[in-house]
Length: 118
Image (tube, rainbow, N blue to C red; front, side, top):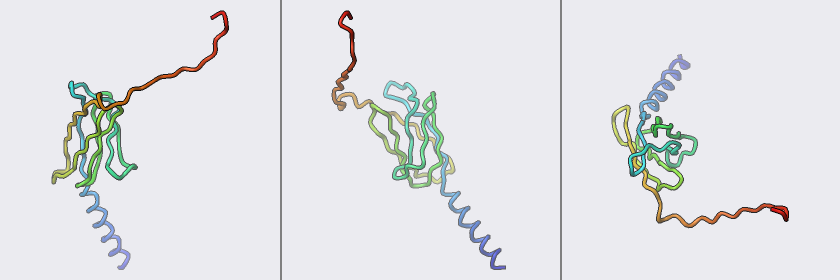
């Protein structure tokens, strides 16, 4: 009997955790409206959970209610959005803006060898 009570309590705890998750979908684009492929979408302070956008800039991720999603892409400023709805699904579309003026200059140096006749 004690075993069945333990199973029942375990089921209640696990179903409560499942209810805490929200399916988040959306599209990531730049300021011109072009979709960005390969944008990293992760849950803040949880490096084990995350995904990337596909070639159309779309993503799907399950996140706990109240968590913060971080959107990051090389050359663009990071954006953060909070998952704070009571629904079981949420659509978050994000526009990332180029760092442009904030970026430092890049100098490329190439090393190699040549023969005298070249």
